[in-house]
Amino acid sequence: MLLVIGVISIMTMRLFYLQVIHHGYYNRLAISNRIQRERMVAPRGLIRASDGSKLVVNVPVYQISLVPGKITGREDRLELACEWLGIDSENLFDSLAEWKKKYPDGREMPVVQSAEKGQISILMENRSLFPFFKLVMKHRRQYPEGDLATHVLGYVGEVTDEELKDDDRFRPGDLTGRTGIEYKYDEYLRGDAGVRIIEISAEGIKVGEYDGISHDNDFDEFVQSRSPVPGCDLYLTIDLDLQKVMEREFDCDRGCIIAMDPSTGGILGAVSRPSYDPNIFMGGISEKDWNMLHGDPAKPLFNRTIQATYPPASTFKLIVCYGALYFELVPKNAWLEPCYGGYQFGNRYFRCWKPEGHGYANMFDAIVNSCDVYFYQIGERMNADQFAYAGRIFGLGRKTGVDLPSEARGTLPDHSYFDRRFGKRKWTKGHLLNYSIGQGEVLTTPIQLCQMVAMIANGGKRIKPHLVDRVVDTEGAEIYRSDNTAVPISQMNNKILKFIQRSMVAVVSGEHGTGRASRIPGVTSAGKTGTAQNSGEDHALFVAYAPVEAPEIAVAIIMENAGHGGAMAAPMARRILSAYFNPGAAWNGKFMYGKTIVAGADR
Image (tube, rainbow, N blue to C red; front, side, top):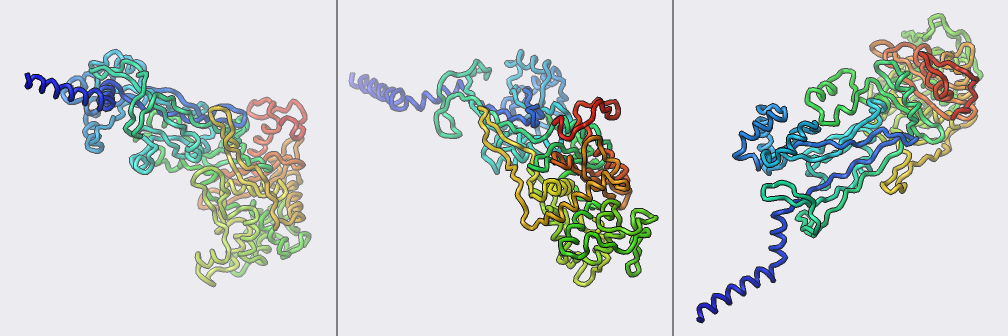
């Protein structure tokens, strides 16, 4: 009897221990045997044009993954599954072997990034036959307009192993921005992941969502299912209609064009050629396609608007003009030695772009006709630091701070630069003669040239180029707005600036102005042409703003290996500005004007 009572007492105490004292622990174990926690990745925020049009959206796709731990003993079924799904089984087994070596922790291996309807149906109907496959719905980025503004928008990619180690917010399969706005504003676009607790059968088949609280080992706390919080939406400064016109009109194989609001720095449009379709990254880019893009000598992934540097050519004469007048090296009405097609300096002969020459000219005429000989003589009088001082006032030689990654700085030489480049006392005035016409060592980015002409247009105020106007969260609250403030520059000489403005107007409207081909009916515009020499054919450049009375738009155009700026880039500016100021004009290979355009009337 005592033995029986003792056994019963021990059993009772044990049961009490298990069922009462450790009830919570074993309850969690029981629950964990039949539930799973799934991380729900938050959809990335949308990217919109200034009018709200969607430039980047999300589309749901089903990803097929392989669970290595569930394949053992089912290899024959895996081969059958490959046959039904249209997957090369030999390549799959090879990839699986490499995957296991790389990730011995048993993590899932993506097999199909974007499954077709037939593949989804096969796996849904044969879950018990193929338990090693996992079907997960994910959001993938889609670019409805194709390659429109692709260098601005950028693209996304799955996080790498290094990123997983460095940032504990990432999980395998997460997307992150790689270039463009997608990269620069990734923190806003990413959103917060959610959790879904699901109940599973003994065979590992999902029964449904578990309505209760589960213990989360990652955070050592109890959690309930919670929905993901989508990322914030970005509203860009891009004018979609203007962007489409720029994409259509820029018919040069290599080069770029950028348009900016001179009063705010907001970028209205930007095109870089050659381009690519970012939708190629949607389902995971193949090695072949990546090698094709990355190895293309034309560099389609290269954003020429901010990353490429070019000699500014004669557009730089505006800076030289400012420096010469600012340092009182020459009166603006002074007549220097006449141009007969070139200028003899020591044992070198520096040619003018016009073989027959321009004759006598003052500063105004030299800008309008873009006379090289006049500016060679200015180059003899200016020193390297004076060139650099004038350029820095207009933002050259440093990054603009535009909200895009990998912006180039350009080169604005001063005497320290020349000393480093050639050695002390080993460079001559000859270098400065090239400097005076925007050749030689000076290099600028297209966005710097656009910022320069925008500052001339707005009366000498410093602006910061930007693409994102505001960021809005899922509830419609504005959580970020760009700074559109135009800051006056204390060093700016307004009298000299007004002289440069008048000269630029004459470049377009004057009888002999080199930018005559950019004229548009009813709108007074100002501009400056440029033709940059390089190892191949010349680059064509043109900078402009309009209307002169109240500037709304500034543009910078660079066409690689296209020829003269006045002959090639100026006509392109005409077409783009015509479409901007007359959006209702009919298009039939050229703009057909049904009315007189009044400056700003249609904006």
